[in-house]
Length: 240
Image (cartoon, rainbow, N blue to C red):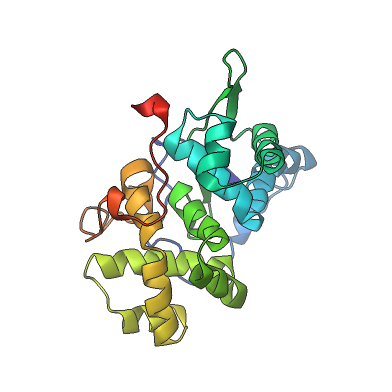
């Protein structure tokens, strides 16, 4: 798959459906010699590596999202606010720096970390990954309901549930409709909709690509304010 890491201005190829439709195979006419050149595939490998690392390591995604939303922050701030050990914090920071997702300024003490929000778009299927999606996946580290849903259904259906939750909070769909759309029990739909509310609340304020996930309802969701979100990280001293 040819994953594109797009800028905020590169929106013309983003599907409006939020990635919950059935995946369609790419048209065969795009699978030509140029597309399949080893050099071309090698160029795309780091992008795919980035996606795989974040989707498969929710704890790593959690640190990335924190730095992305609340940076510049220092490693001690991450340790305190995410309740991580020193060794784990620096391990994750090093990994994110190596992936090119986090910038580290060593000219100050303590060092300051920043991260640009990314949007990753798969050109030929309706999949969009933004910090809001990564936050939703990372919630499994701290929320038993999200962990249960992930273990039972996987990342793809969690992303579909996130889209369904956004539509629900915008008054466009019921919990029963979400359950039917993503093929889960109604009780599970209700559980995951409210478990994902923090990702939507924080994302609406801090994710510049939030509108790409919800182009139709991004400004219609009835969500709590940031200070009402349980476990939402406090602003760092650098923001005061």
